Length: 79
Image (cartoon, rainbow, N blue to C red):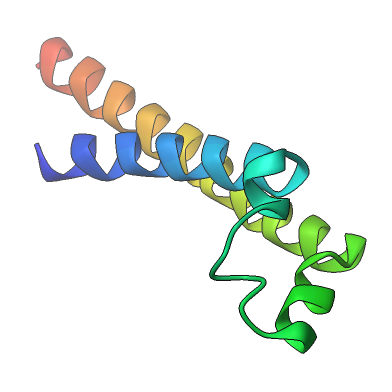
C-alpha cells in the first residue's frame, strides 16, 4: 500500500514540477519574488528547466514503481 502511495505522489509531484514553472503561478508567486535576487533567479529559464527536470525524474520514478507493482501482482497470481 505504501508503494502505491509513493507512486501516486511521484505522479502528482512530477506533473506539478513539470508544468508549473512555465505558468503564471510561477511568475506571480510572492514567495519567489519577495527578494529581488531570488526573483531574478526564479525567472531564469535554466532554473525553470531544472525544476521541470526534477518533475521529469518524478514521472520516471512513478512509471518504475507502477511497473514494479504490476510485476509483483503478476508474479503472485502465477503462483
